[in-house]
Image (cartoon, rainbow, N blue to C red; front, side, top):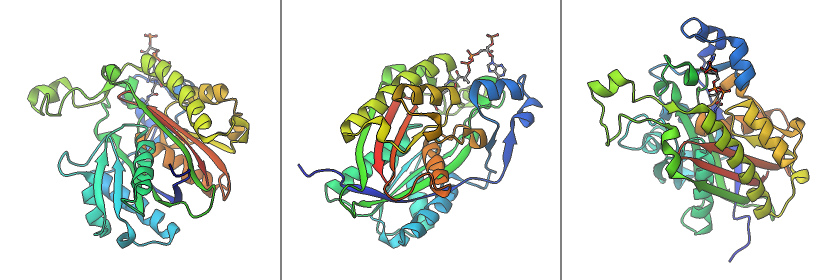
Length: 330
Ligand code: UT7
């Protein structure tokens, strides 16, 4: 067995649509308040794409930045792994649309469905592709247009979600000790009905009934999901640290999935990491599912909170249930 790290994150790039939807905007149509949303979630505003801003187009914008920062062109890619819970179409994959938009003709492209930890699942797959010798240069993307699967008449979910995309170039580790020191992924499919889209798939295809029942939108049992997220993210932090052979006090920055500030607080507390070492930007973007970690990571790099040699802990939880974590030496 070869020793880790096999692979490193050469770059991260992101894109968000310019349209902003604030808590005050939501108060015009929903029985809610800015105070309630900020106190219970930490979210103040989120980005919403227009009908012509597709997941593939947001992904192309984020990917172009990630490629440029890595000093590569689309032709250098030999794989594209795109994590999304809101694909543009059910067939073919959004990854294939992205491949065509980029002109990444040498890449094998496919989507990955793992909801909010999708970017971490995709990193894990990219690491495996590289370790096996299948690929050398992999584009990992987490991209969502959750506004199209959110029920804006349901105040318990409408306040949470937003649109955006993040991409990273993953390649063989260029220096000893630099890259993915550990990855960890897990799932529990028994809990699927606590956060799901009941209609619109092949078990209940789109129909007048589905639309009338609004079952093509996300449904969530918020309190149950909250409790499970706190438990799973705590355990996932422990596991990634153990697998990397590092301790929490060595971590320079925790970059958690941006679903709820109270979940982030609980995760940091469990890991023993002070909030001064935790990246939070859900106030501006809400929960962007698989785009959430790259959006937070990119901002952390831009603000100088992550730089060469930084030790970063990534952790996420979402529908499935699914969870994942990773320790990265930047
Ligand atoms: O990314 C995937 C993972 N997703 C998550 O991690 C989300 C996890 N869940 C959560 O973040 C929280 O459960 C929510 C933010 C969704 C809800 O917060 P909560 O503190 O768990 O509230 P709750 O669902 O227990 O509801 C408390 C009260 C209820 O009223 P009653 O029954 O006590 O009278 C709700 O009807 O708050 C009410 N409520 C609202 N009030 C004002 C629910 N949504 C709203 C709202 N505005 N938007």
